Length: 255
Image 1 (cartoon, rainbow, N blue to C red):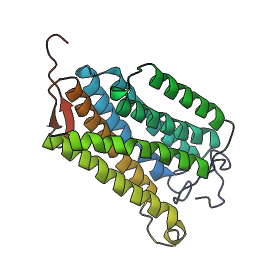
Image 2 (spheres, rainbow, N blue to C red; image 1 turned 180 degrees about the vertical axis):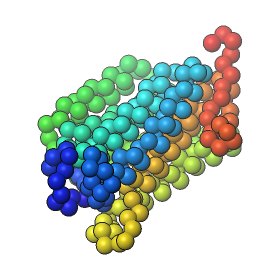
Image 3 (cartoon, rainbow, N blue to C red; image 1 turned 60 degrees about the horizontal axis):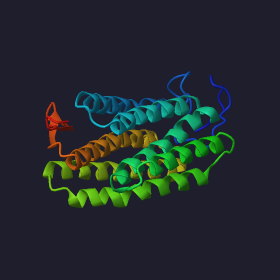
Image 4 (spheres, one colour; image 1 turned 120 degrees about the vertical axis):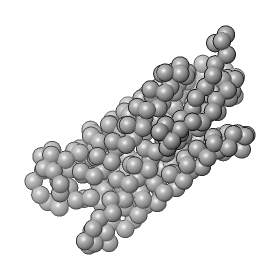
């Protein structure tokens, strides 16, 4: 939220701002809370990445956790600077990440193995090229929502076919964090004018980042469990320090 002060990164060139006063905490960070709230996503993605590598999950999950970290770093750059170039480093990875989720969700039943990754790769490349030249506003949000909606039916299918109670609980955590995060996003977006007159800003967009960091982690964990079941790896949900769920597998000796 611009207030006419002199800024370290120069005038705001991004097409979107949020309901946090610019440079209110640090003279080097435009939106302080919206920036640091991406840290949980990076930490959770790193935990997921270590688990995927340690147990030798398929490379798709390694790439997925790395994409979560790239998205969080891009979001930090965007909110720290509010520059158009950095906005692209946030929005383009958002689309790439959703394309990766679409691949992971739909590829097990896709009979022509090379067509889906080829199409999604080209789609992501073309989007990045167009997005670098054209400033999308509402169009980007509509496009991103459509990609998200494409994932929901498949996630629901995985949920109803999963018999493991602990895995179902992880899926419910995914749905709960998505719901709560979306409420925070809408609250920050729709009620910004009222919030600006409050003595305390609840930082709805920063809360969105935190919830979505956990949401991505729960989604990845649930998908790893489902994929391990498909591969016959006897997966089970265990908890790190009794709190954070992750997937533990036992591969057959032949694998």
